Length: 109
Image 1 (cartoon, helix red, strand yellow):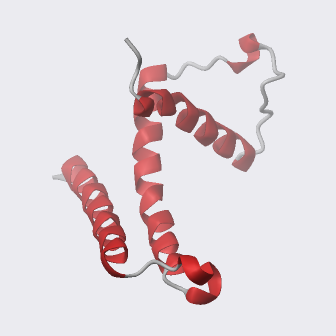
Image 2 (image 1 turned 135 degrees about the horizontal axis):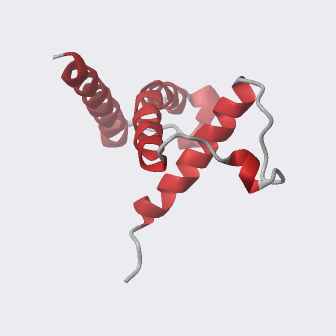
């Protein structure tokens, strides 16, 4: 049985987040490093969970900027979105924001 595509994306998102954090903290990173130097005491399942949560939170401003950019003719030219596609994009952006707010409220509520 083949794994659904979204399950295959989880390690990729975790890896990209790890590289971003490593670069931001100026830690030595890279695939050329010996595996024994790359191990950490962090539970990998918890790391995947938190990576997904962080990616969900970061998605809201990214989606907002994308929606603003795709509506501008000077940026998108003939590929500017209008009508139902623009409405759908904003609806999904607000839905994602509501999910993030719900997640945060559930932690403190």
